[in-house]
Each structure stands twice: as structure tokens, then as C-alpha cells.
Length: 129
Image (tube, one colour):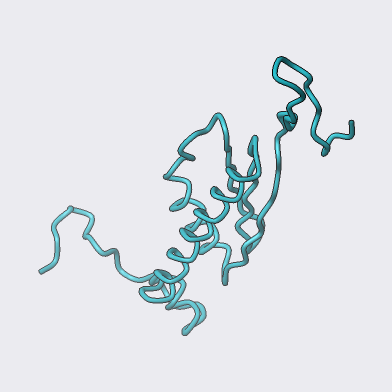
């Protein structure tokens, strides 16, 4: 049979159809406004590993302003669930960046060449009131 065709297995109880074990692969390219935002998204989204790494694996890299994510899965249902869950998280990261912005990206977008913003927490660790 062809690779995408089921194999017939004539065992006790008559023929049964089983799909061969195969790794499915896909790649997502998600564009961001800047490479800094793409790296920030990669770092934030890489914190959570796949729930079952024996079934689904994920690798994220940055190429210019794009977040590039490669998925591999043993079955299509697991691939779909992993990609859908990841896209939900990407949407949350993007909404957060739009809502709160990255101070450096926002300032640079409005005032090219402007100095970086002051740190949120002073170097001595004391918090501002």
C-alpha cells in the first residue's frame, strides 16, 4: 500500500485496518512588527513545553521579524490540537503587546533614536511607590 493508505491486517476476527505510525510535520511563520517582538514572543511561548513530548514536539526560532515554529506529531489530531493551542497563546501574546507594548519598541516607534526607557525596578532592587 501507499504511505498514506491504510494497511489491512488479517488477524483473528477478520481484517482490520490500521494506519502506519508516521510523523507529521508542519511549520508556522508568524510575522511581528519587529525582530525584538518576535524574540520576545519566542521566549514567552517557549516556557511551556508540549504536554506529551513523545507525541508532539515543537521548536521555535526567529528569522528577521518572523517567529518560525516547527511542529512534529505522530498523528494529525495531536498536531491539530498542538497548533491550535499554540496559536491561541500567540494571539494572547500579540494582544498583550498591543495593549501594554514593550516600552522600548513603543518609544522607538514614536521617537526614532530615543534613549531606552528607565528600568521598571531600579538596579538596587527597591521598588518605586
